Length: 130
Length: 102
Image: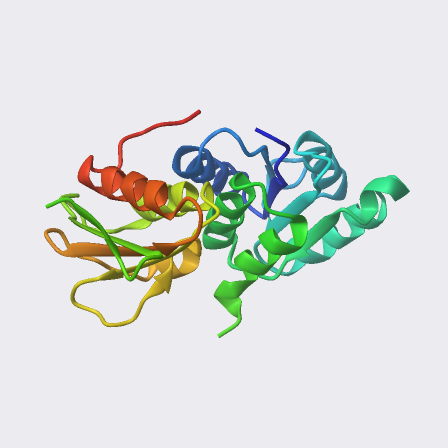
């Protein structure tokens, strides 16, 4: 199969990030690359820009990467991580405005069909449109 | 239980009884959507209890289908591969959504 958009999950909790990634892999399958990160470097709750950058690079696909986040800092740190990427990758990464678990499963389902980054984002964001 | 017929020339329809123990929940919804996306045809789905047709390629809409066990799922497709699409989707539901990771 051709390339599919990669999915990155960023939560304040490593357990939530990992659990969400597990759900995506089990429900959608292994054709979509999924990376996750959560927690601060000391093992507490939080998000960390360099962890997010690593996750984006791990899930990298020529079609781009969609990021799903939970609360506040996860979003601002993800945006910061995107700005710190190499310039050719920066425009191929979006932070989705969607609930983290549902958004990740739906984004990955859409990505599995070979959809573009814009289509994947739109499907994830359908959840917060109404 | 399995019925595929050609109606009105271009539109292919099919219906199948949902035997999944928990009805149409998240995992079957993902499988159905993924399968539908493999076809070029326009595919709609509904349960026999509801009048509204929904896009079988929209995972968020399929998740809200909330079909219960023993309800009948109806498909309607048009386009070049519509017949194959309806046959495959009916088979997926009839076989109770088997795991088929590539």
